[in-house]
Every structure is written in structure tokens, then in C-alpha cells.
Image (cartoon, rainbow, N blue to C red):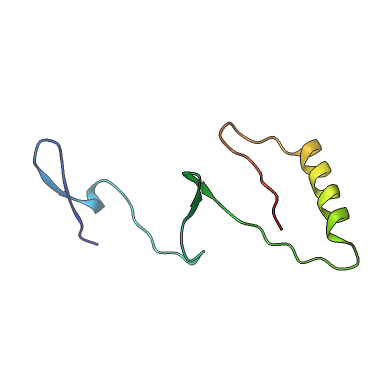
Length: 77
């Protein structure tokens, strides 16, 4: 992949000289909200109401998940 980059000194270098670019299967695009990258998890449940499921999931995450600085979880639906 040839994509020229111009350095502050005016030199032209190829993107491949400074980065490894790969094409992989994955989501159709990078999403962001409020200037923060984000990922989505969709849950398909059976035999439990959504409110109870969310309460249980929030409790488990509160007890077992330590998020690094700058990460957060938001529930929607």
C-alpha cells in the first residue's frame, strides 16, 4: 500500500515505512460518541425479562470488572 506521508522536514516517506497496515474482518466502521471510540455488545436473551437481566449483568460487572482509566460502560436499550 503506497500512501505518501510528508514529514515536518518536507521528506516524503511511505506509510509502510512507519506502520503495518492490515485488512481484517470486523465491524463495518469505527464508531465514536462524544469524541470517544466505542464498541457495542448486543445481547439476545430468553426466559428472563430484560430488566432482571440488566440488573444481574450490572451487579456481576460491578463485582468482577476493573476498567482501565479512560474506559466506561453505558447501558442502553
